[in-house]
Length: 461
Image (tube, rainbow, N blue to C red; front, top):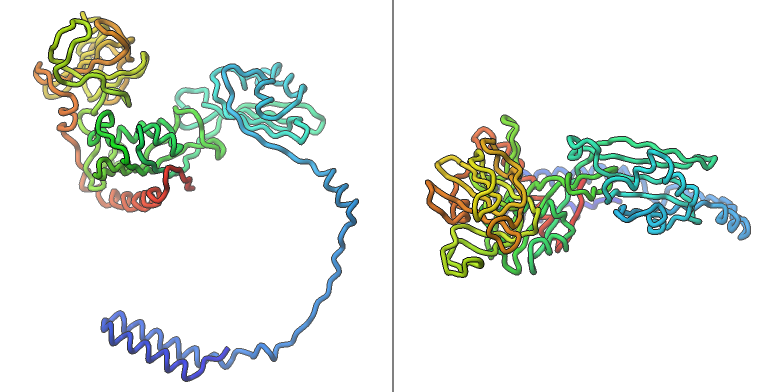
């Protein structure tokens, strides 16, 4: 194709008119570039051959098509492998598991019942991720089960893989090995209609991640009382996978990387950042302000407040009196954590408190955790914020399972939620700010993508 002289002149005239409207140095440079391109195009265009003058050839090739009978015979001899996935249940037998997986194979079932390694499929905790491959008649070819690593130290980083295969002679073999978990970045978003966990369930976000998100914003949002219908959240988090399959056990659910929560029209943001100098990580707002305060907003990951720091009618004494703490309703056995660093001042039985733990913190401050079903710390023990100290119960003067929580400053009772919000926070060190801003810029892009999703999750490699 040739570029005519008139076309070139027209292009140059348009470029000059554009430059007149936008008299900037950059515009001049662009016009110069366009002019050079036009002249070059004019100079080389005549060298291109005319397509009509090129030689043409017609190729003819016969295609062999098998007759219908041969095609049907080949299709009949083709082996179809079916693959299905399931989770083991505590009530499972080999037969019930095979039925859900669509397999019928007495030989494979017998092997699973008798082989010492294969028997581990249905031993121990339920919830193993099982992937079975069988032929069209349900005869098992391979079975792979993935579950938490046997060593407690490795359960956050590795998984166990039980592999069962059938050889050409029809004999089975089984082996078990430990392999590393792989992290996959996932994006999620949702809208609050009833509760946080209902929204995260709808968005297919794991409960462990939802709990981390609540903790991340607990210093700014009271998730017990301040959630509003229509509140929105977007989140970036790690989903740990075993051979590419997202794991189903919560012990290694991954970490929240960044999030935004819009509560009552106000936006709250946070990002996980690890200081390369100290090796410690923490959640920070995008302006570098630490989300970690001296005290957590709640001694439980997520529960409901049944009685606040105010006057109330005492359910046992049947009189109106001031309630000097906050009660959290939760089932017996729910973990209780310390809201701040400190040491155990008292751990044992105490009058109406039943099983109770007193923790002394800096600044002559003390927290009290009462009615516990069990105590997991000892007097004098040094503990860190978020560490488990016991479990919810109904010991002492209690009408049902709950946690009674108190905050005392120099012996005087204070509203725990007010203290938590007013507690001091740590700012990001100056030497880490450049690296931090790069991290923020990256997660902002991911959160923008997450915000475009409505109650869903997107995976990203």
